[in-house]
Amino acid sequence: MDRRGARWCRPRGRAAPGGMDRGEGGRRSGRPRRLPVRGGGRGGPRGADTRGSRSRALRRRRPGRGGGPMTAFVETLRRARIVAVLRADGAAALEAQLDAVREGGVRAIEVTTTAEGWQQVLRRAASEAEADVLVGAGTVTTIEQAEQALEAGARFLVSPYRVPDAVSAIARTAAGGGVPFVPGGFTPAEVAEAAQVGDGVAKLFPAATGGLAHLKAIRDVLPSVSIMPTGGIGPDDAADWLAAGAVAVGLGGALVRQPVARIRDLMSSVGAGA
Image (cartoon, rainbow, N blue to C red; front, side, top):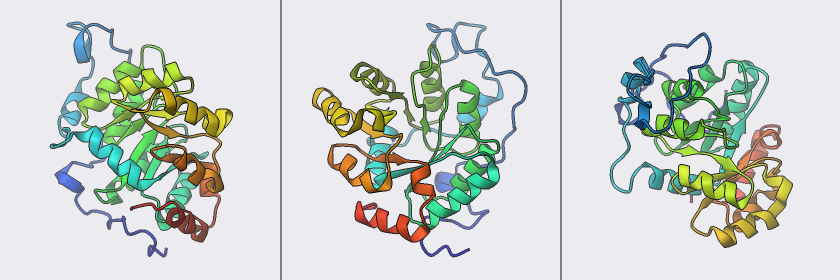
C-alpha cells in the first residue's frame, strides 16, 4: 500500500509516544458492568468500586504537563481541522476506511464502537499514530466501552449524546486514563452541559439537522465552548462549518467514500496541520 500521504504512520512494533503501553489488553466478556453510583467519588460508595484490573491499566496513563491534556487536545484538534469518523459493518470495512483516510493525510480519526472488531482497528490506528495525531473512540456510551477503548490505546473518547447516569462515569474513566472526553448535545442547554463534562469541548450532533445557523446561534451564547459539529456534513461543506466557528468538523461516510486524492485535496483546502 502507498503510504506517501500518511506521514503520521509509524511502523508496527515501534514504541508508542511517551512510553505508553499499547499492549493487547484483555477482551471483556459477559454483561456490561453496573454504573457507579453518584456521590461516592470516582469509584462510587465504599464497596461499590468494581473497576478491578482497569485501575492498573488506567494508572499507566496520566494527564500531560503544562496546560493540561484538554488544552493540548483542543489545539491538536484545531490543527487537524477534520475528524474522520469511521463506521462500518465489520473490521475489514473499518480497516479499509482507516487506510483511505490515513493515506489522505487526515490527522484526527475516530473509530466508532458500533462495528464488530472496532477494538482491533483502534489498536492498530493508535499504535501506528505519531504523537501529534489524534486517534480515539466514538459512540462511547458505556463504561465498558470506555475501558476497552483506553486499553486499545484511544487518545480521546466521544459520545454522541447524553447517556443518563453514564456520562459522568465515562468522564471519570477517561480522566483516570489521562485522555479527553467529548460528550455530545444538540440544544444550547445540552451543549453547555456537555462542555461542563468535557472541560470546555462538546460535540454538536446531529449537526446537519440544525445547519450552520444553529451552530452560529449556539456560538453566540456559548463563545468559550470549543464545538465539534458532526453528523450529515459533507466534504464540500466542511470549510463553511469551520468558518462558522467549529474547532474541527467530524466527517463520516461522505468522507471515507471519497478517493484518496480527493481527501488529500480537502485536507489541503481547509489548512489541516497549519
